[in-house]
Amino acid sequence: MIDLKDLRDHPAKYQDGAAAKGVEIDIDSLLRLDEQVRAIMTEQQQLTAEKNQIGKQIGQLAGKLKKAEGQDKQSLQEQMQQLQQRPNQLKAREQELADLLADQLPKRDALWVRIPQPPDSDVPRGASAEDNVELRRWNPGWFDPAQPFRQIKGFAAKSHIELMEALGMVDFERGTKLSGSRSYVLKGDGFRLHQAVLRFAFDYMVNEEQYTPLTAPPLVREHVLVGTAFFPHGKDDVYHIANPTSDDQLYLTGTGEAGLMAYHGDEILPGDSLPRCYTTVSTCFRREAGSAGKDTAGLYRIHQFDKVEQVVICRADETESRAWHKKMLDTVEALLQKLELPYRLLQCCTGDLGPKNADMIDIECWMPSRGDGGEYGETHSASRLYDYQCRRLNLRYKDTETGKNIFAHSLNNTVLASPRILIPLVELYQNEDGTITVPDALRPYMNNQARIG
Image (cartoon, rainbow, N blue to C red):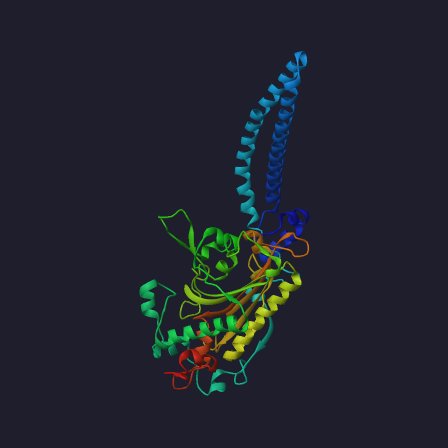
């Protein structure tokens, strides 16, 4: 959520930011409603002040009445009567104002939460992911994406679908029977490999990066998704749970980020306790509402998956936020290099940032089965949000120097998501006889198994 005071002072900044992201907003209506709401609240405060003043005056008159006689006493009694009647007159106006506020405030807030975070000035302009800019790429010594797979390996590549079905690692047919389209059942070594990559990434975050592990509930109340800015934008991609036994609106999360960030909602953290660095492994659910007809086969675009996520809550300092963003990318690169998976970093353009991000970097791994002879596919995403989420969550910290309560900054990153990461793993580590070599980094999590099949 953006700072309304800053919006009042710099409306063009937010209008331009929304246009850069391709988001339609109505700033004029928001400012008009905000002015009305503030006028109502100002009058409410004035009425409260007047009531307090009347109370004091009544007390003073009561003291004078005890000593007054004759005409003076009668005059004071008339003044007392008038003062005692005034609160009843104010009460009627207070109710009018309360009714007005109850009508206007939700309208203002509904427009307010739709104002996106303006992109940082160094984010390239663009309309969609097609306009993202490649920053750099990395390849293990044995692989060059510019060369055909056959030339590198000496045989034609099979897709992860062919490989995993032949080795009994996945069952798409029964998965669809159980849960419908974009569903699957990992079996045998497929499930073991899935667990291995998750544990590999989780252990790295806890043991090497010293992040605090937390469980992140996949089932959350509506305010969690509003507070983390997944609502109202993106609501169509979230599963809503029918729960007739409760008044709560409950939803399945699409990322552990929601639970990790909302964990400190409505809190004031000690300034010297920052940064807070959290990681989780959680099951995630996405409807993929906007991807009809895209990647319908295999493990790339599915409704349920597991993800190792990291979240950082830090001081409200742009330099510090940018440093954490870089460190998150360093973490992903270190993991992918340990797995020897070729990848590239993409700077997302303004049109691909989404409403809540000031900046976002995607990481894509090479997948031999995509496109015509292989292409990169997104596997990770690291975002910098400044105070956008923390304002919505009312998550603040007490500054150690000034003693003021300040909205914190937040960042998040996909450390590793599976089974999508199995696509490059299986396809790049396949052998000519249809077996799959287990990367060295994962063998301790596979009982030192060196090969599948």
